[in-house]
Length: 167
Figure 1 (tube, rainbow, N blue to C red):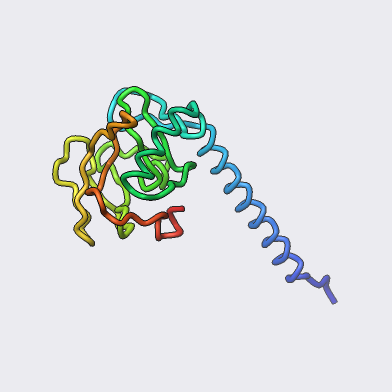
Figure 2 (cartoon, rainbow, N blue to C red):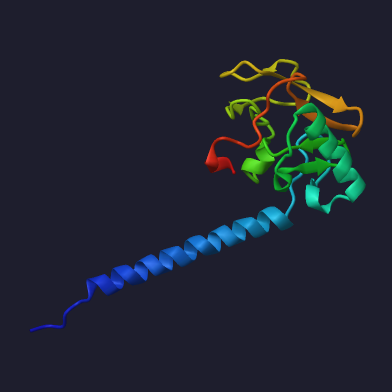
């Protein structure tokens, strides 16, 4: 009679190891998002500024746009600001979804139906959601002095991205 192998113990150990690796990757991802920065896709600035690192008066002026034009409070962890070209990458932008820079497609999500929008560059005058038809345009919000990808005034904007995979 040979030695018996405890398969359940090996399976349990495998589950514990995989869980620990998953938690470790999640913690590392959160650290990278909070402490590393992206270059701006629209100018030569090598570091976007996290919203939480901005001075309070600047935060207030940026939030004024979201409250007045989009009638919502954005996810502040998803806002990145370029202080050189004065562009706000908000919680629906590609910077929130992925830390990879996409120089060719410049993606964001529709603020009405959460459909992925492509080719949202600064000089594209025909940005439109392929699903709900909402048009977008890069415009400067006068009170804040920053440029935002704006839907038309009065558009009902969802408060959060519908797809939990992007949150």
